[in-house]
Length: 187
Image (cartoon, rainbow, N blue to C red):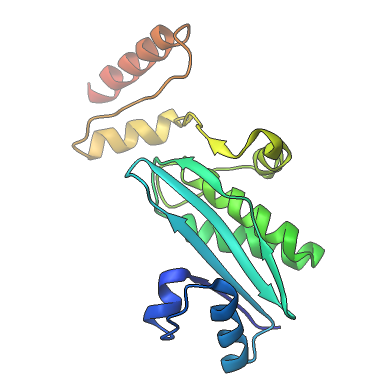
């Protein structure tokens, strides 16, 4: 089984496919390399802080698309890797391309809400967001900071930490906890 997972831009730069239609580009790649599945990640960047992310797959003349996820960006790093991991996890387990593109797309979009290259996202979070499709796939996820890692990083890196809190009720508690942790780590 040969699967190619690639960005829309890389289909043009690496393989010279100029088509705008993803189906035509995927067919060209299948024909040229004898692939079983071509997966193309699609990112639209209306602003630095917001992206639209979706996944397209082509196999045996059929097209599979994920819903578009509207992500509030924390960090783009690792988004494509997360998509590949999520896609492969589901596809190798279930052999279901539609489920695989949806899981890969949502997993990647959730990864964008986590700082760093690793996707600290659970399978349950992905499945919950997938079930919530009727309400849309807008992701506005507060990042839960692992205090020991955050404090270690603060001690080594000149940075200004920014914490986003979704509730006014929890803001004073988080601010106090963070202030205490920072002053303790800097002593």
